[in-house]
Amino acid sequence: MSTDNFGPAPDGNFTPPPPPGYTPPPGSVPPPPDYGAVPPVPPTPGYGQSGPPPAPTPGYGQVPPAPFPPQPPVPGAYPAPYNAGGFQPPLASFGKRCYGALIDWVPIWIVGGISGAIGSSALTSLLSLAAFAYAIYNIGYLGGTTGVTFGRKLAGTRLVSEQTMQPIGAGAGIGRYFLHIIDALICCIGFLFPLWTPKNQTIADMIIKSIVIEDA
Image 1 (tube, rainbow, N blue to C red):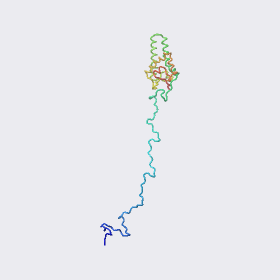
Image 2 (cartoon, rainbow, N blue to C red):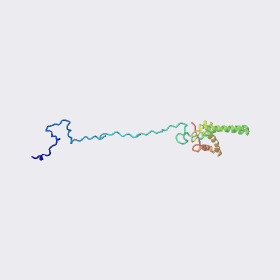
Image 3 (tube, one colour):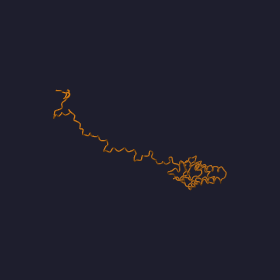
């Protein structure tokens, strides 16, 4: 009988199937895959949960502090020019200016009257020199260095520079004294200029850029 109908002979590695009811020992054969099971899907990061709030913008909702906060003005330190804004002392009235000038000039007029009554003599020259020296010292020097003459002290006024609000100095004070000659040459109308000028100035004041203020 021919063996062609039974197929090729099995080789030496052929393992016969286990008999019915045979159970392989644990770990010898891996379990078959469960083709019907769905592998778990890892959750999306943050899914179903609210993420952390975004970091607030620096300064959001807040007013940043000024880098250089304004400082209160220091009295007497770098004052602003007159009419530059802020607090400024009031200008002296025309009446107070006249009162102070009258006190400053009365001694000079008295000495001048005495000199004229005596006539030409050495005493007259001495009295005239004394009156001139007094005017230069009181009206020019004291008025320039301190802003206050004997008359302004009683009248409660002070002479200052309109640019710095400080005394104008000895040189400018003496120069202002001589510039009053211009005020006198036009029939003394220059002394009336404080009645209508914006800063109550005479012609000498406008040239020197000085003003007379209330001295509290």
